[in-house]
Structures are given as C-alpha cells and as structure tokens.
Length: 109
Image 1 (spheres, rainbow, N blue to C red):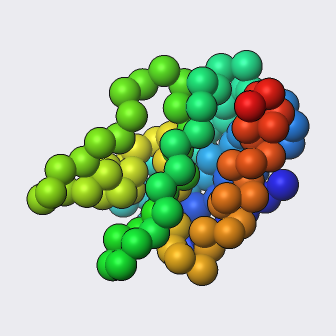
Image 2: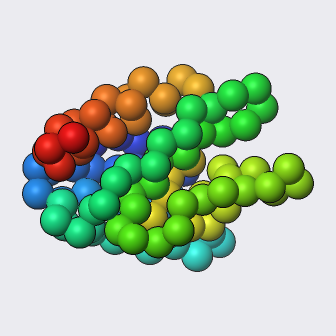
Image 3: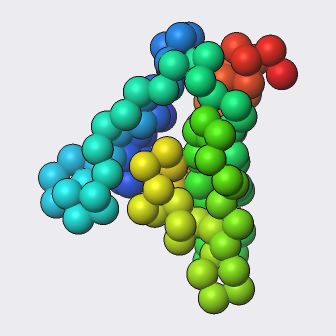
C-alpha cells in the first residue's frame, strides 16, 4: 500500500514501512532522507487528524517519545522535521487512516 502527499510518501509492503521525503528542494530543505522501518521495530503508529488550520501527521514510533507540541508550536510542526513522520492535509487523511489500520492489523492490534 502506497500513500503519497506533496510532503512525501509512505509505503507498507507487509513487512516494513518506508517513509520518503518529497523529491527535489522540499526534501533537501526539510533535512529528511528515506527510511525503511521493519514491522518488528514498530511499537505503534501516531496518527493525528487535521483540524481547522492544523495539518495532520502520520508517525512510525519505534520507541521515541510521542510528539506533544505546545500552544505556540503544535505537534504537527514537530512532525514536519521529524524523520519518522509525514504531514498530510484533510483530503489525504482517509488514505493515511487506511494505511494506519493496515499496519496496526499487521502488528496484531
């Protein structure tokens, strides 16, 4: 299963999750590089729905502290530069929810 956005893509092949930053200047400026995380290394998926003017995010958690954010800097702003995260819009949310469900089913949750 592959989900693409303007801010990158996430692919789940049943045994690993691969996160890729956007191609071109957007990926270089963000400081992210492609990463593949084996299913056995994933503890859970952090998933935040977009709300109002706030983007949502999809994050593969392998043991790092969850994104928390503050009133001045919401968690999705941290997700923009987090290598385990992809930020998405309201229109892209259903695809990411489906991806989250597929990964959680593979994890046995």
